[in-house]
Picture 1 (cartoon, rainbow, N blue to C red):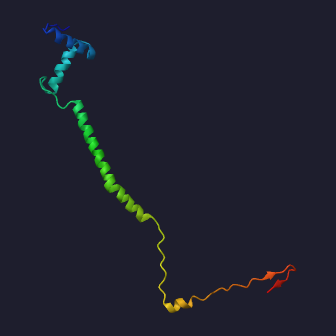
Picture 2 (cartoon, rainbow, N blue to C red):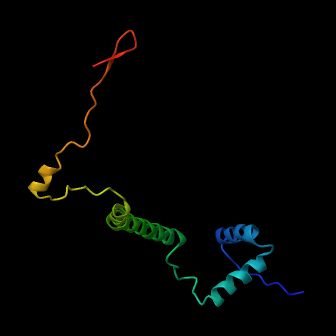
Picture 3 (cartoon, rainbow, N blue to C red):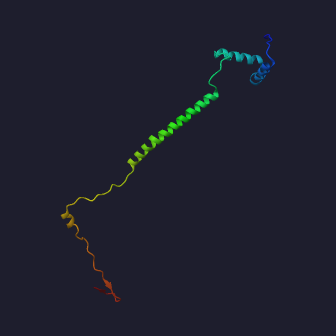
Length: 132
């Protein structure tokens, strides 16, 4: 078994350490070893302030996401919708307007002849005979 040594801390700091230790680790020794290892392996000083924090990273990400959304909406409005409308108009099938053929006047006058003539209607009398 390892020997213990006494380290003197101010009462307020010792209480904070004990609360932290109880929350995250089984023993105070394990807590202190983990804290020291963290600083050693990450090659940082406990006096340094780590920037950016999680909140600032989140805020920056949200700003960038909003900017990307704005860019996508602009692209949709200015490029995608007009392009789709143009392509759609190309594929719509409309009957072309039929223009009358250009015909010389002499042929146009000849065609005005009546091809079918109306037959005179016949009236029937009450006796069943036709009158003309």
